[in-house]
Structure formats: C-alpha cells, structure tokens
Amino acid sequence: MSMQNRTNDSMMSSPKIIHIGLWKIKKDVSPIAITDVDKQVKSFKTRIPGIELAHAGPLEMFNFPREIVDAFGISPDATFLARGYNHCLFIVFENKNYRISYDTSKPHLDLSPMMMPLIEDGMNGVLTVDFCLPRM
Image (cartoon, rainbow, N blue to C red; front, side, top):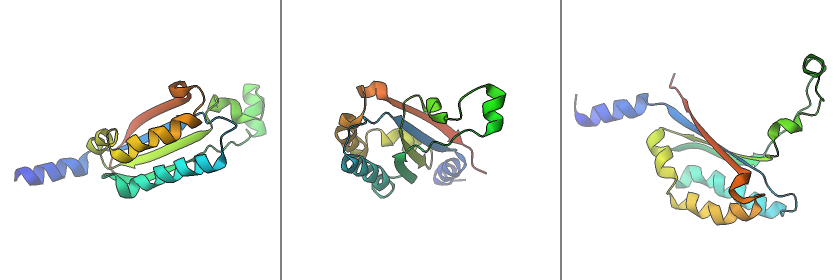
C-alpha cells in the first residue's frame, strides 16, 4: 500500500469533529449585527477546507413536561439550564486536522472583531467544546 493510500485510509477512518460554541449575546445588540455574525459562520462551509456543516443561531428553549417538573421538583421553564448562553455555533469538521487548521484560518480570525463586541463579559461569555463523532 502506498503512503498516499495509507494517508487517505487514515483520513477516511478518522472521526469527524463536532465543534460547538456557546455565546452570551448582550441583550441590547442589534439584530442586524447578530445576523451578520451568523452569516459569517455559515459561510465557513465554502471558505474553510474540511468543514462539512457550519451554522450559528439563537438557542431554542422548551418548557419541561409535567413529568419532569414533578420528578425533579423544578419549574417548567428550562431557560436556567442554558446558564445565560443564548446563541450557538455548530461546525462539523471532516477530521481533527481540519479542526486544528480552522483556528488560524482567515474567516475564523475575521469573526472575532465582529463577534466579540456582541458578547457579554468578553471571553467569559464564550464556551467552546469539541468532541469526536466516530465514522459509521
């Protein structure tokens, strides 16, 4: 097996990486500014190699059903679980190498000056996580 084939096989078998960013968007931010950030994130799919899906938008909140309210003795309002985060970035990368190169890509770096003025309490209003999605 050639080195190229081994590399291709390794890339095909390596897990996809899911990248999630949660943001605490300030309450007084212009909806146009938020839409611009969301559009920038969505454009990553065509502007950054290795991205299969890129999306950003507000979190959805649903009330708990009566069974959960009764079982846990909580309010039906599930908003508290978001801990103040109200917006989400969701990106699927083909593999970890693309995820790593994303950090220094120009479109990602261009997002920061657009996004950070919208965030409550600077980087304390940002939470990011990555996890592996094994190939099936």
